[in-house]
Amino acid sequence: MQQMEHSQTWCYYAGRHRRIPVWLLLIGPHQVRPFAIAHSSCLETLRGAMHQTWTTIQTNLVHAHILFQQAASELPPHRRTQLGACGHWTPTQVVAHLAGWDREAARALQALVAGAPEDLVSDVDAFNQASVAARAHLSWDGTCWELRMAHEMLQHAIAALILTQRPAQGYLPWMDGRLADYALHTTQLHAWVVADP
Image (cartoon, rainbow, N blue to C red; front, top):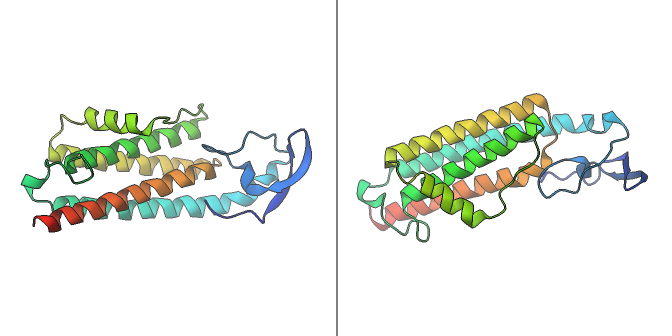
């Protein structure tokens, strides 16, 4: 999360006006909330930083997605359905896993923009299993295409978030997680190629 602890503002919180760090005003999963904001200008100071942060996330996700797809394209066909690329997963299942999380992240951001109640994944293992199973009927090319579509969906969701300027700093750790997920699995696919070129 972007560090803003030193920026503070007066807001109504816990029954009285008090000076609190601005970052506490930001809405998102696992954040302290909600507050009645005493002055609407409280969030105005955050809009520029939010735009820059989410634009950077967009760019980094594009880069991470391209690197992963390049690594996937280098896999010999006979390796794409072999177990062990990531624990007990095949490379095809890894691609399906990434697609599932990109779509879920996009769905959550779309819900935030629409003002819908949060409905976040509570059981990661169950989500992973269901996400991979839902795409098990797809071919290798079909699964890679599904990941491209999921990535585009997430990019559009971030663009909509930037446009509406909804406070969403609490979602940034999740986006960091998406980047880390791509990086991990890109490394694993590279190792998979090196192990059997």
